[in-house]
Image (cartoon, rainbow, N blue to C red):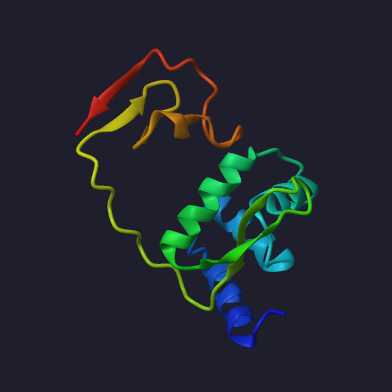
Length: 142
């Protein structure tokens, strides 16, 4: 059951656009169906938005939302989709905070999609958000 403070926080976040588009979409799905696993969020995201994101992508986005303080790990449970014992996620009653900067000295840059990443594997996250180019034009940037 969602607490009243979580409902108020949800409306503040969504009405004021305090999260990026994809983060907001994942947050909205988790708010509606949570607590839930990343795969459960992925399935509901597909039903709601008609777009696919990888389960790694939804897990990464949930981790980003956790780092912002708006979602939390409640523990683990057997996923209703995969059957594996995985993290159970839910929303908090906190407004987002800017996550601490990565401690990596270099980031990777993709000239094709004009985005930077701490890890080149993050490039394949969301098919609508990141390009699907071959990782041949990467360079380290400070």
